[in-house]
Image 1 (cartoon, rainbow, N blue to C red):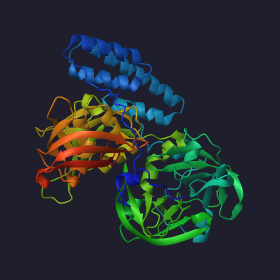
Image 2 (image 1 turned 120 degrees about the vertical axis):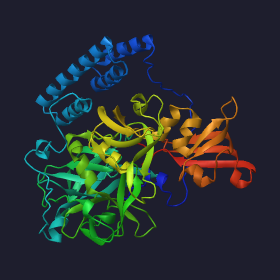
Image 3 (image 1 turned 120 degrees about the horizontal axis):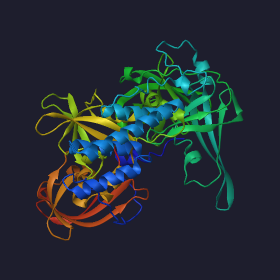
Image 4 (image 1 turned 45 degrees about the vertical axis):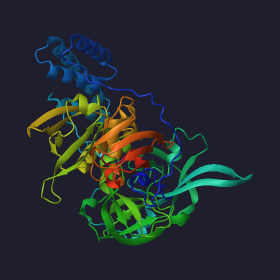
Length: 549
């Protein structure tokens, strides 16, 4: 199955168009605000709220107590509250570790470490995969594989989701989804794409579905399988069968690959098992996923290839094939294996891996005159009352490090988030306008399906329009429908549409796609670049992308 490029097409319009389903905003907006620590009543209310959540929201309560303590130095109530939150988190950390809930332990341990409280150090790298997969270590060997291609083909499977019968015009047809996968452990763990098995985990799907795999050497036998873990954002999933794998793939290091390197894809295009196609890496940094850059390859990929391994000349998996564009031969994509390795402990732990975020929007900042040399991430928008805002981080600040790890680009932030779960605290070092470095403590919450929609629903349109459309607006009247453009973001939708500072804008209508993936704004505008001639204008824009973090 070739992914339908749900979020991909909303970021890169390959066909040059976006189709919208009319869905008016309900306008039931909720506006957040920061705690005013100068108001005694506000402080007392916050203390009562935190104490009521100490046991049910331990880490978030710890974060709020830390912020209050830092903003009210010497306040005994704030200090006592922080001590109680630290005790609650520390006690629960010991319990989780004793219960061998290592990944939950990691959240608690790293959160304590972030705010400067010594805790038992736990890291994803220290959580050996054999703790999560009994008896079998996933092969991360750097040695070249000596296996034959025919052996590798035996390690790939056809993933088959049986959806029963569908009726079209009174006639019943077999309904099934086909994809590919490959073994990563001897006892039957298989990697594939999330979109291949989506109906098995989609809570909104109410139809019949059964998951099977078919071995390359025995395509007639359906072997039952189950979904262990999945990540819809990275489009990866981990399956498990009860059979012994005929061949286990080694995971390589895709950081070593560059444009022009030869690679091969193995899978079941159109259900044709044991198919191998070859080509080269065409690009290493296509921004088709919201939190990751992917490979563009010219190896032939067709429906059914999704989830299969992309191997190098040594036979090591360097990426997972996930998308091709119909009617565009040679335009195919694969997810670098580094991302799979980052989230594999979470997939093995079971369930859905939801990426965390800080509720901000920014771009990689480059040093003036340095070409491609990066110096951090410039924050261009902060959700009012959100995680960054409450931590004291402002628009214009530059993120230089997180938990002591240097940050040079947005990719660094996204990679860091892949190694962490939401409901944890991180220390973010930022450089403000005074060019001084300062540490802030930020809570990581669940990244929503549509970050831009969250901005829209929790902020005024004139402010949310900056990250969504790319221009900052100043009200020109009291009815909040007429504005002047005060700032235009380079490379944004507004920039490409031809807006300039001081252009007049009148908001006419706002619609969203059915799943809130995209926004469609209808405006009346007078643009300087058009000689201030007035006219109607439609501005479609995606509501997710790599700049939301």
